[in-house]
Amino acid sequence: MKKILALLLVLVLSVSLVACGTTDSGDKGTDTPPPGGDTAEPGDVADDTGDEEFTVGFVISTQTNPFFVSLKDGAQAKADELGIELIVLDSQDDSAKAASNMEDLITRGVDLILVNPTDSDAIVNSVMLANDANIPVITVDRSSNGGEVLSYIASDNIAGGKMAGEFIIEQLGGAGKVVELEGIAGTNAARERGEGFNAAIEGTDIEVVAKQTADFDRVRGLEVMENILQAQPEIDAVFAHNDEMALGALEAIKASGRDIIVVGFDATDDAVAAVGAGDMAATVAQQPVLIGEMGIEAAVKVLNGESNDESVPVELKLVTE
Image (cartoon, rainbow, N blue to C red; front, side):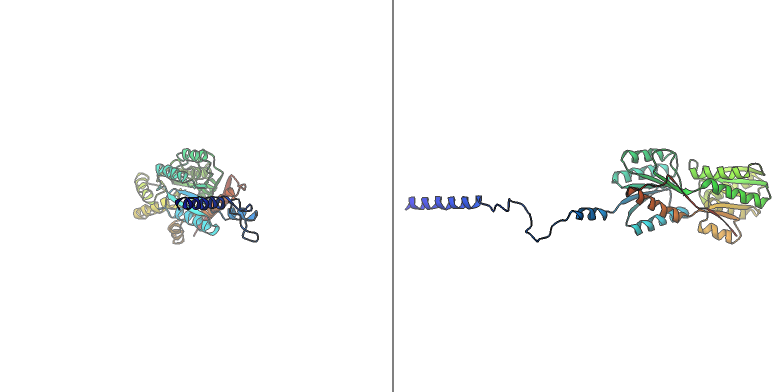
């Protein structure tokens, strides 16, 4: 009986092994779907890649200045419209923070970096690091003095400075004493606006009796102007490289009781209101929202492999009462 059972067990095992080793020749162990089932067509892969969402990093100099808030808002609105993920990092007017923000975006592996430099010289090394990581860079409103930048989108600061200078010449009849409040040292905006202004007044009888940086800041503009008012008994006009400094200078002038023309740059809401009220004489209008929008549009062109102009100017105009 034991021998019979053993023979039966061997026979069962043999049959099982044969059955397991036999497969359908049409199967071959693959997941090939049966005829008529869902199959991937050659165009399907291309369609999926067309839906890819790009990620753009935006390093912005500050968010305490209304101009740069508008710049960011313009970029964000256009990014939302075009389906771009936008990562905005605030440098808080600190070059070291700007460098840290750039490194952060490089580490994240964003597809492109928009940067509004705090300092045009200090940002160069960060731009070069992005270049090494094969991340395209576009600058907006302020330029980088080195590294590979595919496009620079900004107002013509030299032309704007000349516009302000020509207005002051007209208001003063070509003669008088003027104060120039400069922006953050090292920014191309401060350098170019000053260059345009001084080129305009050259050859006239207008004299710059004081020239001092107030860091594009309203409080600094107030403090610096207070000191200049004490030192200079005769001042006919002030040209400030941005509206925040102009508005600060205006407060100091009002407190002093003196009658001095004030011209700013940017056409922020507060400055335009001051012009409308007759407190400020004029401001040079940039279009920060448009600059932000154009920055995103340029980024999309680059990411889609299209060419883009190296320098893209944005129109200016003078706002007066």
